[in-house]
Length: 102
Image 1 (cartoon, rainbow, N blue to C red):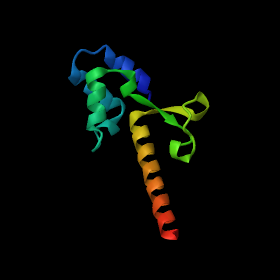
Image 2: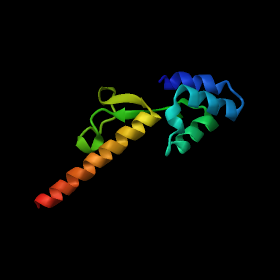
Image 3: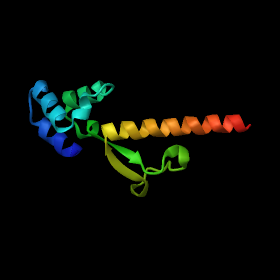
C-alpha cells in the first residue's frame, strides 16, 4: 500500500466522506476493528505522518534505540501497529519466561 501516495491524494479532497471512501477502498484494513482512530486521524488531517510511521528495524527493547537511517524503516500505520503489538507480546513472553526461571 502506498501510504504517502494515499495521503497526497486525499489531501486534495475537501469532503471527509470522500477521503474516508478513498482510504477504505485503497486499504480495507482501515475498516477493521480497532483501526477507527487511525482512520479518523488520516481522514481529518490528510497528513502523511498519519499514513506511515518510522519503525526501528532492531526494536528499542532489543538494543536498537538509535534513530538512525541504518536502524529505520517506514511502515504504514497499520503495519506499524501490528509489528508493535507483536513485539510487545514477545517482550511480555520473555519476561514471563525469565520470571519462571528465577
